[in-house]
Length: 220
Image (tube, rainbow, N blue to C red; front, side, top):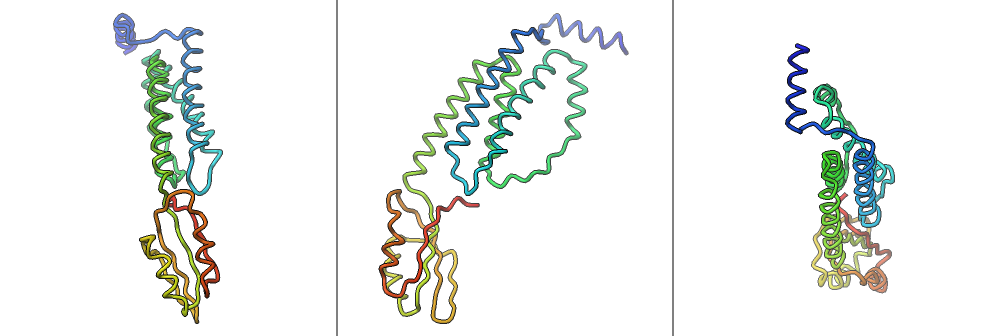
């Protein structure tokens, strides 16, 4: 069995499929992976639009990129270790729940950057990461022009007609309506351009309106 493994390893070495891990190669791969990880982390930190930003998840992005990088370097240099590593990784289970679907995309981005850097394709990893970052920024600007909000208004029943006329141009989607003794709480999902945050003040100016609140809707 040992002779078979050695023969298989020699054939792989002759074919050039196994990489030789020199110190300079390791430093280049890890440095390129770190640059990609910092770029992904910056995109997550400065363009995050969720309800609650998690610094731990940002650090996780950097760690996942670097760990994936050296795992792929190990697999590319030693066929015996790669077989054992695949078997050990297959029994790992992750139980942490990811609330925002966009976070899954950042994790895939980090894993992809680590894979390509560990395989020695670090120019490809850097170029693709920059391209994805530019696309993500452009999509973020397009989303910011007209965002989704939750409009929550509390008013007296006598002011129902005035409030209905005020919110009718918004073409909002009814999410919730609570009626109590003499009062109504209305929750609408609306699309509104940025710069119109004075809408609650306009509603409060109506007679019978006790409170008006505008909350950005992120889907969480």
